[in-house]
Length: 172
Image (cartoon, rainbow, N blue to C red):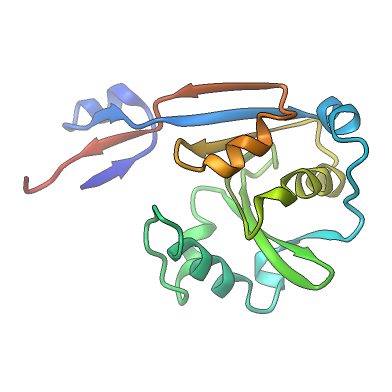
């Protein structure tokens, strides 16, 4: 099977079918300031994954351990996670890696938000806003990330669903 993001009609021309479900949660600075104002983020650091010793290995291992994943070899996880103008960051709490985030160039879209404990979502997002001084972020999630959905729906400004990818089954 081949899975591609991108323009629907472009890939339909080559035999792909649009499908799958993704969710987009919009979180803005007001949600952070008022919705989770009592949540502390002081001990959370958002650091480039390449600068954290063992960061890429952690990310590959955690990704490969999820129920649904595309396998990432630890030796090439750094190359995979930085393609398409994506930037991977490590989430560190008091010196311990607790997750990773993959963002767009302007930091306003998160394509991967992975934590050891999703109850830390609010702390991590608050630290993310503080680190990058952004106005808003869209967190894109697959349908099956139910723990993260439960956390984001609690304070996000909006949520919408839509198709996520273009699929082509080869050698069926």
